[in-house]
Length: 239
Ligand code: 6GU
Image 1 (cartoon, rainbow, N blue to C red):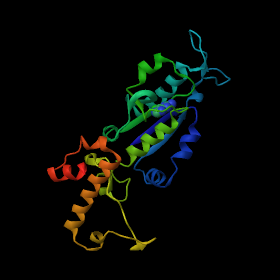
Image 2: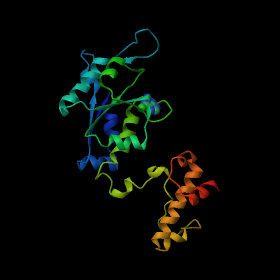
Image 3: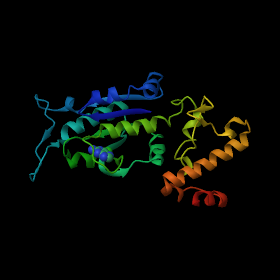
């Protein structure tokens, strides 16, 4: 997976993605990341990339030409028209199924806006996907792009230590994960649930599944509608 980020703050992307798992995945070649500074594609010698909005109003608008120039440089480098994700609160809300779909691509371009937005005409020409990460307003698209790259990267084969863990976690099957315990057996007078010490794998799986159902009912009842529950599990959720 090759990530390309078009941004006015390339150092924010480079710093933010140098963490343990992402950094290692890049080092080991499972993913690559290149941040392109849109300012490098400003035609004027002051490197200006924004201007006031036609029709008036507050703030500045990122101009079409430098954004297009940065996009074309990526397109020329990879040799085809990639999916271009524009990070905007006006987009579809990012989800695990979307992460799974994006993870199939060879390249993904993330276009990060700032100020009041980007000239609509360049968006019409290059953007294939409008994506938001939730209903709140951020100052720019960099953090949302990093959130998406993290979620997508962990689905790329080889990125996680444990291949099984990418499938078996919260949201797969629309249930939250069961609770986890490690040593010691007693901490602050709380014992680890006895079944987990039993070595009886069938009972352990049964207990974990029940815990997932109970936890989802308590914390994310909205997810239960989409979960595939047995009659017994539905009764558990309704307690
Ligand atoms: Cl993708 N961008 C901005 N600026 N704010 C957001 C967002 C994106 N998603 C949620 N809030």
